[in-house]
Picture 1: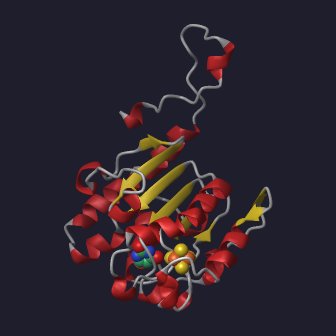
Picture 2 (picture 1 turned 90 degrees about the horizontal axis):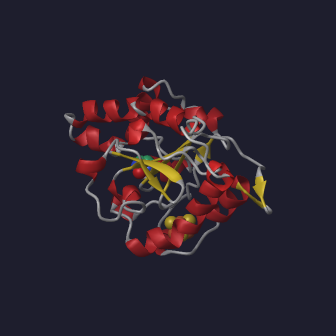
Amino acid sequence: MIPPDDVSPSNRSIEGDSLAKVASEVRACTLCRLSRTRIIAVPGEGNPDADLMLIGEGPGYNEDKLGRPFVGAAGTFLNELLASAGLRRQDVFITNVVKCRPPQNRDPLPDEIEACSGYLHRQLALIKPKVVSTLGRHSMSRYFPNERISKVHGQPREVGGMTVVPLLHPAAALHQPALRATELEDFARLPAIMEAVSQPPAEPEQAQPAEDRSRKPDQLRLFE
Ligand code: URA
Ligand code: SF4
């Protein structure tokens, strides 16, 4: 069982918004049908200053009972994946594309994902992570609607000014143990990807006009 000490309520605010406000709205939300079958909504938790934000699919049985993300078997493996990459769960922020459990753990429906997207956008705007990792294909398809996860997993891409790394869902390896090694390899790349995003732009060989200097670096060798 994961201790609750990695829950970090935050009062950081952007124009009056805060993670605590998002969380309390989520807990009372009735914007989609999942509100009728959930026990407890699961806003997400973690470090409000996280460099890495992980976005899963939706709460499962255990998450729905406890109101916390990734606390069941997939969560145990996620903790292992993070630890193996030298990352600590309390340093990242973990949430889902839908904050309420789909009945019988069915896939979230497009209209449910859409209804819930405002909360995810606010969390992203407040946390401003360096890197976003999607876990599983529902979360991935928010950023790469036409990609196949089997093809693009582990490869960082720039999307809307963010670096997004699509990853396999931790539960995938619980069903298919052969995927374990792939998940471990993909997670192992995250620290270097986060480091690359932190680097200042390389000095240009020739002086650039002033307005070009503020440009973000074209994403780095890792991204090629
Ligand atoms: N699977 C998910 O996608 N999210 C959770 O929070 C738990 C399991
Ligand atoms: Fe609201 Fe999202 Fe829960 Fe639907 S899944 S009720 S939109 S919090």
